[in-house]
Image (cartoon, rainbow, N blue to C red; front, side):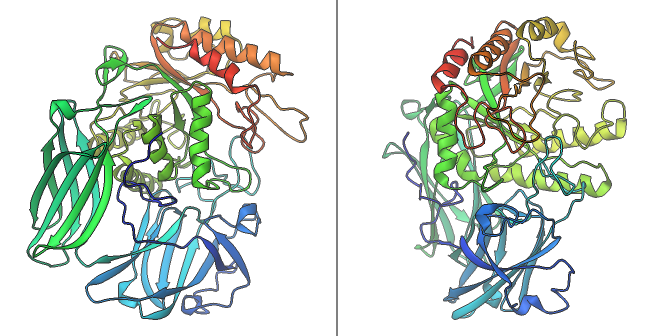
Amino acid sequence: MKHTASHLPDYPRPLLVRKDWTNLNGEWDFAFDGKNIGRAENYHLGFKPERKIVVPYVYQVPASGIGDPTMCEDIWYQRKLTLDPKPDTKILLHLEGCDYITQVWLNGVEIGTTTGGYHRLTFDLTKAAKKGDNTLVIAVHDDYSKEHPRGKQRWQSTDHGCWYIDTSGIYKTAWLETVYAAHIDNIKFTADLSGKVLADVSVDAAGKENLSLALTVTYAGKRVSECVKTVDFGTLGLEFTINKADLHLWNVGAPELYDVELTLSENGKTVDKVQSYFGVREIKTEKGKVLLNGKPLYQKLVLDQGYWPQTGLTAPSEKALEDDIKLMLDMGLNGCRKHEKVEDERFLYYADIYGYITWCEMPSVFALTEKAKRAIYSEWQQVVEQMKSHPCILCWVPFNESWGIEKVKSDKAVQAFVNSMYYATKALDNTRPVITNDGWEHTISDIISIHHYTQVGSELDEFLNTLEKCIAYPYAGHDRGAFCDGYEYKGQPIMLTEFGGTAFVKDAVGAKWGYGEGVKNETEYEARLHSLIAAVDGMPHMCGYCYTQLSDVYHEVNGLTDFERNSKIPCEQIKKITSESGR
């Protein structure tokens, strides 16, 4: 593993790095506002804290220092900031994740309100900032509404089924940066196998004139391309080519990456400098195969929900994110499907530099109202825009198992909404496959994905051992099937994207569950795992699988590891099984 030139430990935005930043994680003032009196009593001007909270952990989890699972719909955060505003600069507050409605004040001045829990939130504090001590106040509203994208967050007061403790408030890194008034906002890369690269760079020109943007690309320290362009306004498209002799493709297990430096100048003087990176690779679906750089790719994935026992949806550290990838690699897997969660972007960074496949999936709503449609449509577009330059992301998944779109099989209006999400995703990024509804009841979809939880390998083979069985409605041994009414198979690749889920827990206490009849010991567990994966491997029409799941999660005990990431059988035994699979 080799870091990019841009890497900074704990830095939360790996695709656009400035070396000067302030991490705001740590102890904040905190208040529950169960009676929703905070605004009437002017909490935004500063409030007397009733307790402390450790950001970025939500109050529901132990690591926050509170650990109270009771839903409180309105909560308040407060902390002091020491600022030194300068002319022609902006002070930006970033919240990598805050669920669900976030309102920010600085020194009593309202800065803004943002809705959504799965994209980066940015607030410009400049207008209210003063030299010296400043008071930052953040109010967050969350509730059990099924119209919000919830993912695996429960919508009632206790865990149920495969839904777990809710996540309210700041749950990813909070941080500050000071930038020049004219600065680089964002950068997105699109590259093809010929070496042609387009860098879409968003620049906040702030009314400045005589701005120019220079881009320099290096590989292993060698300069391989550069370009300069005058800044007028908005987004600049910088096109450049990497010569064939310097062209190195990103691949699974072979993560070739290019380092990038962007310099914004005003009248020839540098006013902003950022670092980034990109990979060159091509993903296509063709003749029933997924092709990576023109070659068939057999995906050996695991379902990864990204929960930890003390921190919930929040990674306990950057190292924990990397360790999860290393653990999966030790099991012989080449990727994961991040399930019902938009992961900390540092996970994607490590997937990029390890050459590890990642699927990006939108957390589901569970009631398809017009409000829910707007919420998921808006949030998903922001997620795709934020994440699409990561070469590790192989596939976009806007929906899972008809959750929130329960009538999709026969309801044309619901089908139209699902298809609008497909086309919106393609409009933002036409370089990756999109699975509109992972598991069953596909409308338009670039991959046909199947979920089947039989626990006997021979049955799995019997149920899905022909192409015809994989595109049937219902699947054999199942009550769901491949397509919605009015849709049919058009030669797409087929994958088994959820299976297994075998329950195995030692010294079980309380209600634990997995899929089917659980196993009693390590020998039985290894045999079950081997039989299921061997069954998939014996199906020539399958181009990969995703086993359920990486770790146990709370009461769900169907992981390859327990909740603390201790493997239930040695990783080398799992690797032996998975290494026998593939084409």
